[in-house]
Image 1 (cartoon, helix red, strand yellow):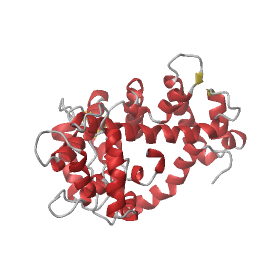
Image 2: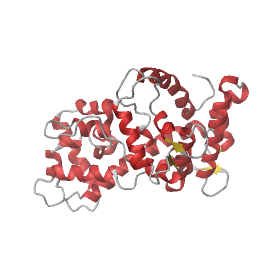
Image 3: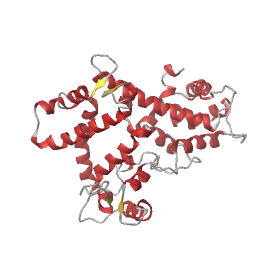
Image 4: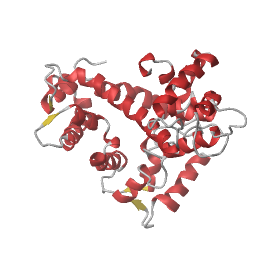
Amino acid sequence: MRPGLGGRQQEKMALRPFLMCFALCVVYATSKPTDKKERVLHDDPLSNLEHNDGDNFDYDHEAFLGQEEAKTFDQLSPEESKERLGMLVERIDKDKDGFVTTEEMKDWIRYTQKKWMFEDADRQWKTYDLNNDGKLEWEEYKNSTYGYMLDEPDAEDNYSYSTMMARDERRFKMADMDGDNLANREEFTAFLHPEEFEHLREIVVLETMEDIDKNKDGVIDIDEYIGDMYNAEGLEEPEWVKTEREQFTQFRDKNKDGKMDKDETRDWIMPKDYDHVEAEAKHLVYESDMDKDGRLTKAEIVDKYDLFVGSQATNFGEALTRHDEF
């Protein structure tokens, strides 16, 4: 790893060799890669497994934990899981009426998402706010993130890193809500996680288009759309690629001009007709509501501990292993 690069840029560099290896592997594989799926901010497939709670809860566990995080459940005995989940229910029940509604479940799941985001921002903040004044100038961030390249530019990497630096500066300025050319903690969080802040969602759309629009004509054609997730010239396309072509033609390209403009790209990566948090909240309530009154008691939730322990309701399983939640 090159010295002088900050955490965010290190992640970008570390990902490069993996992506190159992945691109080679996908030539021989027919399974769908994950890069493109990550572009869709709120409509990702939750798991590649079949959702059949009659057999197991693996879908729920992988959907909201990922394969590795789902193993957290194995660290707890059923008795300990039930005990800690019971304590957690008291926090989810915000109005303290003894019941957890779908809205309270949604609020809790969103809270766990936001908590992770702010914890991530706090970790990175310490890397950049070296003088501990609670503010961050663009020059501070730039020098910490791109300092090595600024001192010793590499001809091979110069263009790509110059482009990334320009994009970072643009996003940094857009996150600066008060226009003082400084980022406070909240503005820095928005800079790192623009998809979670309404005023920065347009930059997510713009950056997505810039990544995929290879001929720089301001729109995304079907070849660019497919090329963003699959590139194996001369080989027969797997079925999932053919399905994606149909998705583009039938659903992505709404005005049927053969291209996705900015509005169509926004609808693709930020669909308005599906809220995965609401869907999960409704799923948890429906599966646990034994008396079908539309709300959950503590007993009903604890009885379904094996479902909840692997869902977003328990902060990807971490809330059951972290004592500071209690």
